[in-house]
Length: 255
Image: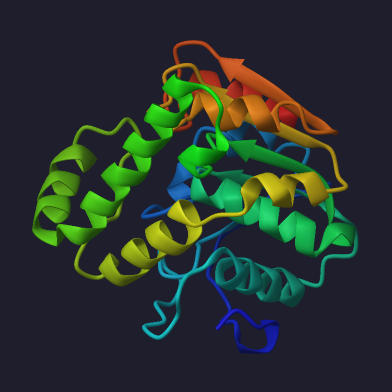
């Protein structure tokens, strides 16, 4: 998996509006409902295309796929190619979708006019960070993710509980059906990622938007990416990982 010729076509969950194209890709264990607060703010002047990631939403689940960043990006690329877009577009990714977006923009630079990353969980190996607190935080996240994917019963039970309290209904989809793409994406696209080096290779302007209360944001890596050429970071007060209305307004401005 991972080669363009073998990548499956994904589901176009929504395609509305007219004008410059904005392609929106959601994060792990979610769907295009992620952008329900963003699209109403931009659809009057843009064509908004929401794509469900491989293994999630209404897109196909491929059992023999590793769900690496390369696999996800290849499926996004093949799906976008099928739309026959004529001009470079703005690519918006939320959470793991931001990591995929960075890989896509680095791999196919001529297609992307602007890259907007929302709540990106950018992680490095703890040993790559000089600050003791930053190393501790990074190690905590990576240890927690290993526990989540190695304890299926615990994760499924607690995901069902958490989903009921989310501000965006159905923003989390961790079930028996999505378990394989979830754990493989977690391990191979979030725990093992190349986002910092991908961003360093991106030629388009990059806007990063995240909340001050984001549960998955690591300050150590955010310090590093904020220093990269062409990257502008927006920290939104009183916002968490999901794209609530406050965060959505800043995302719309970035687009």
